[in-house]
Structures are given as C-alpha cells and as structure tokens.
Length: 136
Image 1 (tube, rainbow, N blue to C red):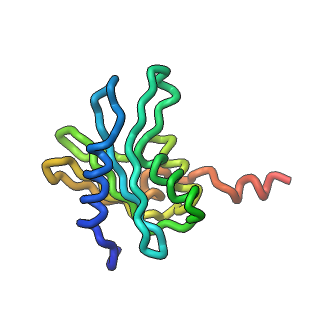
Image 2: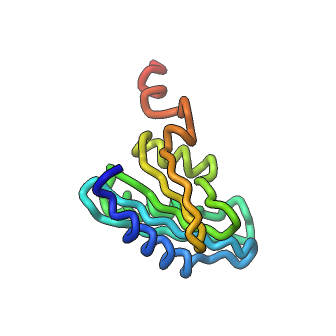
Image 3: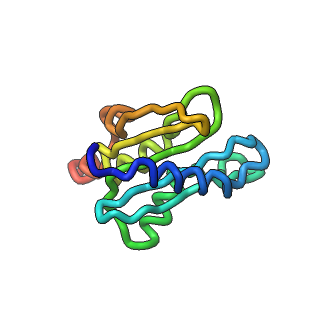
C-alpha cells in the first residue's frame, strides 16, 4: 500500500508496546492504527488476572479510534516479541474485519523481522454485517 507512513506507525506501535500491561505473560504488544484521514491511534495489550478479560493491542487501538468517532481504517502495525512476527489473534481479526476487511497489516519483531499481509488473507470468508442484514 503506497502512501502509508510505515516507519511512523512502527515507532508509535513500539512506544505503545513499552506501555503495555503484561504482568502475567510478559508478552508486550503494541499496535498503531492508521485512519483513512491520516490520524494514528495507539494500542497496547492490557492483561487481567482473569485471563479472558485481557485486551489485545489491536482491539485497544480500534477502541481508541472508535471512541474518537473514527470508523474507517487504512493500515495497522503490530510490534510483538519473539523470533518471528505475530499476526492478530482470531478475535482481533474479526474486530478489524468489522471495520476494514481489506486492512493492510504489517507485523514486526523488535529486531526488525517483518510480515506483510491484510485482514482478508488472515480471515477469509469472515462473518460480517452483510450476514446479519440478510438474515431477515
């Protein structure tokens, strides 16, 4: 995708990762979500002692954008530890697909490993709003 400030997004995601709350897994993740109008919203994972209540960085970024009134997204960058870049979990894939089924995704390791994809490739045949409208 041309025109995406990938390095700026990566920097924002790395800064968010530094603020993650991950006392249980120690797996700090940061995300930076680019809106269609050029704004960037950061997210970090927020764990909870009741593991199921934890919030992933990607959904945290989406929540911040939606709270600001934004519903249209162009790209997301994720930075997470490990030997290889990680992709959004299934729950995050579904949430991202709700707003931007073809969203560009770049995932980095802190050392610079890179994976490029999009939400449609990560979640083919996703359930979406159109399924509900056709259910009458």
